[in-house]
Length: 249
Image (cartoon, rainbow, N blue to C red; front, side):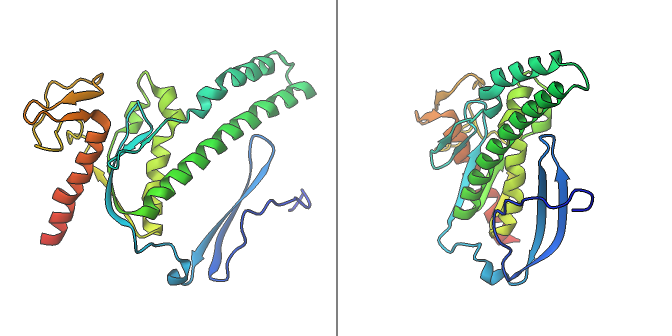
């Protein structure tokens, strides 16, 4: 590289014969490491093998503070909370950094230590989100998820926790990966009462509180797990509102 010279490259994968490089971005991060991002275009989508014929038709995904997400299949993915797990170590490093003399070699070393820990947390979160988002787009044709106002939630008392969870990034990845893998992401209106509707008889529980994790329908006596019920209603919304309207259009 100009003014820098040769830099060792940790190549994650080779560029395939059916890929054309469109753009290359070089950046230096706060941990003094260089990163190269390469954008490619596929010449032959058929050879890309990104779609599966055996995908399931649809799945509903509910996002809550109790779990990172809960699916209509009954699967619960817990919050990894990478920032929270490293918070004590991070505060320790930041305290040491604040005590170092500005412009000194020791301050530079201390700053680098903080930056490396931030990079580690970021990489852990990205790895988790990429694997999880790939799972859904690779196995389901249609993904129904509530269109939450995540930016609004970030202004509340749980802002640190929400930023640590990475919900906004997860939905962003689902969005572009759905296009890559031949799936469809359906964002359901945030005012749709997915948690309050009984997925069996569709009667609305108007007295349901945020603290209620389980509730029994007064009409059909079905005992609900709040989050699974919400995910099932999101899946049902796809079939009733989205798929049906697409057929009649």
